[in-house]
Image (spheres, rainbow, N blue to C red):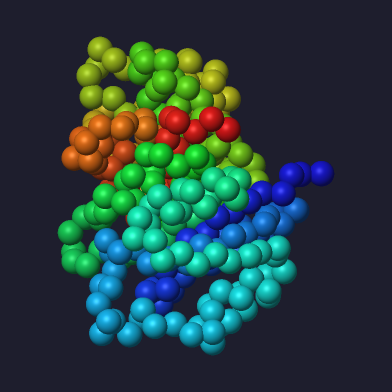
Length: 275
């Protein structure tokens, strides 16, 4: 019998739609063994207007019953809820998810406030770089089904931590595809033709046919976005090294550009994850 998953779902009471909770309940409905869910209710102070004249910051028990308790009970899942008013939003999530033993953190992503590319707050980057488990970024309007799974790897990397990260991304990609009876694809970008990734190694380590291995020339963010669009990927799985340097350095990496270029849900692994 499969082990019971633990899904840690972030709900921002300022939002009208709770896409992370909706996606977690869809996941629960597809499992032979329904996961346990912890709903973490907290306001992202960097993304939300916290002034008193924001009516969405005032929620009552009717809101909780309609938006949280009702959907959980209807889904028939084992669940509990936790309320946090910490101003250190990202660290509160990490701490609670770690104590819960979460297998995945479901994190809602707010729609951009203008027509420009998607941007991420510093607190979210801190969470992605330090979380003890994968973080699923759930976007409003993204397809909820998991019929096509795309994993982004870097097989020309020569550092051991990057190779280990490739293995973890592939492992999770296979798992997501298997659980959803989905097609599994892999993408590997390269810029320098002298560092062309070994297709034979990719085929051996992924076990995939040639048509599901996408090796293209170009910057990683552009290639991943192109392939995701071409194959109509429902979820993209990427890795990021858990740097501990200054925020401006951490934010300027490849992972941030990849996330910005996608419209689908994105699952992010950091190299510090040990399980």
